[in-house]
Length: 348
Image (cartoon, rainbow, N blue to C red; front, side, top):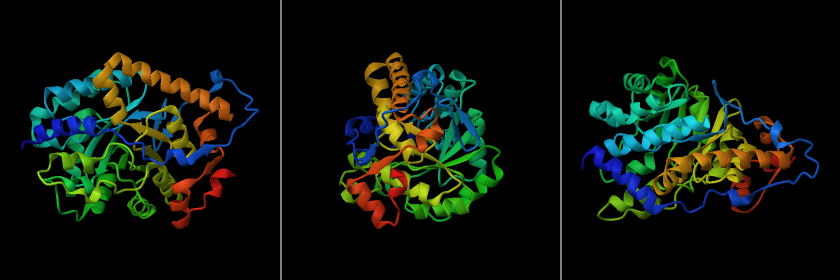
């Protein structure tokens, strides 16, 4: 099977397997504030993600590219939606275009459609510095996202089985690339130990990519002749992973992703300590089922609903939302407590 065919299969099975709302957000509750003392007009959604300054904490996370004209059209529409709503956008892995230059158009369309927006390039942990430079140049990218997808590769019939040297390659890229480097998990979450390792390599922007959204183990099992179900329920839920990452990365910008579907999910991610929230599968489903105009309206609605939530909490900007009081319960509380993370810090 060609890499192009595999990219198209990933989109098909991502939409077919869907999302199961297992990210842990049901365990996160805001403490109601009866005297918020501000209006929705006074709310700012501006956020800082490492050295990047965005007008919204919501961004389109890495999804696709490298699958010929179909993925070019998808990235075109996603880029137009990002431009119209002022949000950032990451593309899917560009290794397909590095190996086959004919696939470059499916990525380059993003910068063409959104010349002034924040565009984030993407490669896997197998990439070296020369490939990183080519990926960044292809998009005139504002940052490079390096994704970690060990579980997907192990489940993928034709996937990698060797993962030595990834941290060293990431550190070299960080040292030699002249744009920020973001390291991202792909749906199985980051532990505090992983965060500590990445911080030791100088990485200052991390996307936890938690369990609960698009499940690449289940997707790859749809592609296997004999299912390898070991990893179907494997991973760290998004809410848990944000708290783990925050506990280990004191001076690190944390991005949340993994099953985020509405403004309340976004607000909870930020209150747990994230600077931004990436949405992928939910946006892809909306685009495929309803079209680009409907996706634009959905993102605009997310922004308005987030402002409404922030007004109710008395938080006039993202920093104040990060300081909102939360109560953590259920499985998320038990996990964090056993991992030595003090949940009372959020309630205070």
